[in-house]
Amino acid sequence: MTLFFKGIFADQANAIQKMLSRLKGNTIHKDMDKDFLFRTIQMLDALHADIAKLSQSGDLAIPLLTSSNIVKYNTFMERLQTIELFRYLPIINYGDPEIYFKKKISRIYQEINCLQKEPLITTISNSDSYYWALPSYNIIAVPAGEEKNLLNLPDLYHEIGHLIEMQYRSEFRNNFLPVLDGFYRDEEQRVVDEQRAPGLVAFYREKRVNWINGWIMEFTCDFIATFLVGPAYAYTNLKICTLSSGKDRIYADFPSHPSDEARMRAIFYMLHQLGFDKEIGEIDGLWQEFLRHVNNPVPTNYAYIFPQKLIEALGQTVLKACQTVDLRSYPDQLTKFNPPISRILNDAWVEVLANDDQYKTWEEQRIGEIAGLL
Image (tube, rainbow, N blue to C red; front, side, top):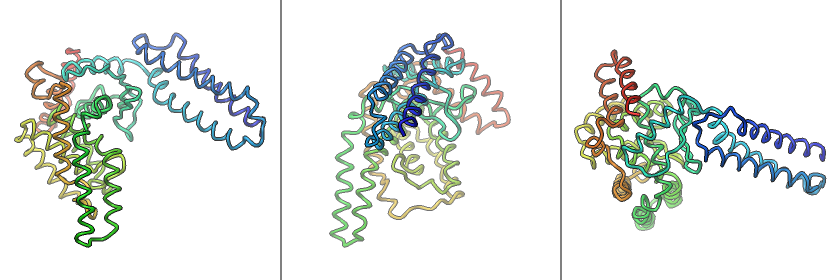
């Protein structure tokens, strides 16, 4: 196995050298974030040094260390693939769409009064993963061609929310955690007092863990996005839900994400706090009709997974946190900018629902209008 291990570790080292050669060459776009580029080179250099240290140690020639060497190979490969996907590819694919989004995100950050460093926007996402954010690297990924669309862009504010949530996590959740603990503690006690099915205790504990590990964050980002872009986020969320409905997932929960139905209730709650009751009525009418038509199954004990009490308690915590960190709400953006990008995104949904046959031309004009703001 000695030659085999030397070969596969050499292959890793060669792959890193090729990546470094390109990053240090003259083909990287001049507008690429210099700090992001420098840090990526540092990370690749460090990984290359670790591989070289192992290769020179003699450990690859010791049979008793075979299992350990396999683990190290997999660990190095995981590091390499993470750097490649989340740093190297955004750098080498940086072009005109990214430059456009760089200007757009700068404008949005002005409008929402976000003082964080602006994230790198990359168009390396695909239709499966849609929009996503990686706060640890300060990047947001969108599908190719999104610079030419408006109806999906409210979801960009959700991804911005992930970056904000990471920095101010304690403000966005600490006051909510006692409410969460109290709710499930009371429900566990009811199992004893009312002699309910003992399996419910494990069920409640699992859901509480999911709230803490994933659902609080996702709900928080929905609340932030609604706070920042208003009713347009609800429409975009309904659009996304059409994909879930075909797989009977409207009421389904996953460890990383709450159900679509619960997320829509959260969005409506924040819209109510902002005074958009008329818009809630219009969107909720569409939502209820949608739910009737798709007729997705509701899981057993669903009321104890996403009770409205918890959604509203978290919503209040997030609303106060948004105000504490001085984010500018959608209504406040309307008074300060003429128009903010968020207004154009809301107008887009009004237009496509009222004049779908003319929407293509209207959208092209509004995209040009946004370009004029940047």
